[in-house]
Amino acid sequence: MAGNNNSRTMRIHLKVWRQKDKSSEGRLVDYTLDTVSPDMSFLEMIDVLNGQLVGRGEEPIAFAHDCREGICGSCAMVIDGEPHGPQTGTTTCQLHMRTFNDGDTIVVEPFRAKAFPVIKDLVTDRSALDRIQAAGGYVSVSTGNAPDGNAIPIAKDLADAAMDAAACIQCGACVAACRNGSAMLFVSAKVSQFALLPQGQAERERRVSRMVWQMDEEDFGSCTNMGSCAAACPKEIKVDNIARMNREFGRAMLFGQQREQRSED
Image (spheres, rainbow, N blue to C red):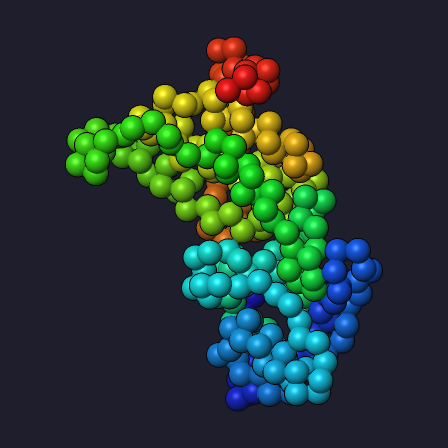
């Protein structure tokens, strides 16, 4: 819910997870900011806090970010128990402080998952998602030049569904939101964006089998159809993709895409 703050500035209390490195124990540390503008983004508020910490000779809070435009998904924070914060369809960098009220206490933690070890403070290692993508989330066969692609007729409903799946920014919010730490929504989106298009058919069985096997090797949890992944996704990827991926994987097994074949390639 949007904040109901009408003042020029806000007083915000923060409880931020601080952890020196992977092997150290972490804890929540209290901070207070007295002059937070409602128009600040959440990351700008953290920037202000870090400026104060550096001015006092303290270690600034480590957090990941890049585009600050809701595109890259690097700004992975759990805010008051919700990945990317309380607004739906929004990344942390696009969350503004007017969402909160003057005097609020906000708890800020890293994405929590067995497959996402904490590197420092709010920064986690989410390279497991990169390895899943590298296992098969691509088209390697020749699909021709751009005009050739435009010449292939694709039904609008399939094109729209593929585009919606391709909107996934690989942020890992679905994993952080899942009580089992499952990556099924992410993997299913990356499988679906190609499975729905003719250009993705040549490697259809190989793609889904390799990505699912890699997901299992990365120690992500299983999916129990709670739907919290889709609720937390800043790009609102639908759980329909999980059902499609399960069908694709079943088809791959039916067509004999066995685990042993991967090691022979």
